[in-house]
Length: 455
Image 1 (cartoon, rainbow, N blue to C red):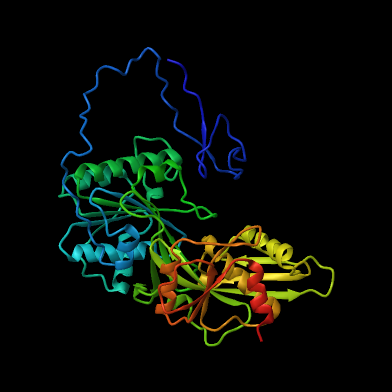
Image 2 (image 1 turned 180 degrees about the vertical axis):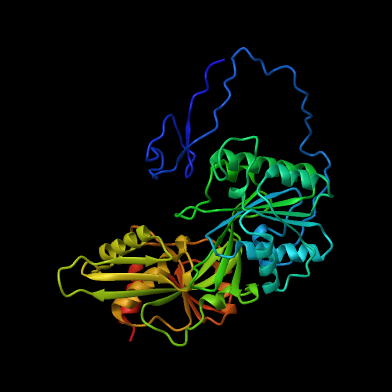
């Protein structure tokens, strides 16, 4: 048998190198290469076409038992999941440290346990006394949750095999788990992959245990560990939010049992995470009177319209200093493109001004339909004139200065009308079945003319 070759795995991207080096050649991160367990070299003479058991094939229309979703007791959590936890599914939840992942899962586990269903919570980061202290603070100390502090996957699976399969199994977190069959420290690529595989196999074989794995994130916000971890699970969720703001957003990035891009909105309070049934009121709070540089955009997260405020500030420079472009909550590259269109197609000059753009409440926008609202805020800030009161703006701006249609414009306008907005501006020809007065715009220059000439 040939001698196993040494290999080094990047803990950030999963890249493989034949020797150790300070910087990963794949992602460019420093000091992330760790030696992996030696792989077993098999001879080409081994034939895998014999010696196994036959695999049973079934037809697509074969009768199958419909798995009923299990509610977490939190409507916003269920919404992001697509209706609740599916028995036998594996959910991976990532988020920054201290954002509230453990609090949210402890609250959901308490609801399921109080319904009389078995619930197991295994913490690899905290002692049981610390988890019990949090439970008392949240008023969940009476919930019959089976709590343990362990990091050995063998010990966890041995304990679970001696008891009825639980309805919910929470592992907090997968980066702290360790398998004695794999060489390497907890958190390495091989350990994370191997431990997750064993836990997911347990959940699938029990046909009733919903597994939730908590995952660490890197400095750029992606889930740490090998990328294959996200392929192994059924649902990948991201718990987002700014620590300086009270709101938290639970976003589904992958969901085999429902739609992606659904969100659940929570607010951090002294008693834990509280559901926010109407997030638009949260992101629009404090709008007492119209101000220059402020525009409201009806964003769409999955099937939920959310109204957010976009704020812009233009500062004219007196000297020849290089102007700054600062963006919070939006793509800086898209802002540069929009400024170029305003200069080239509309004759506005931003080259001698600093531009600051902010999405209020710490919300992050990725919807291209926000182009028109951002442009309206920029033009309003430059003219120092507020936009029409109780108005919303939506539309995608092309490089030619055209305002293009957006998806689900009617749904966005209905949400705006429900919250008391009177007028809407967007692409010409958009469907408007509400009492809201809608004005269609074909060119970005039409927007500039309306704002600049408005008294």
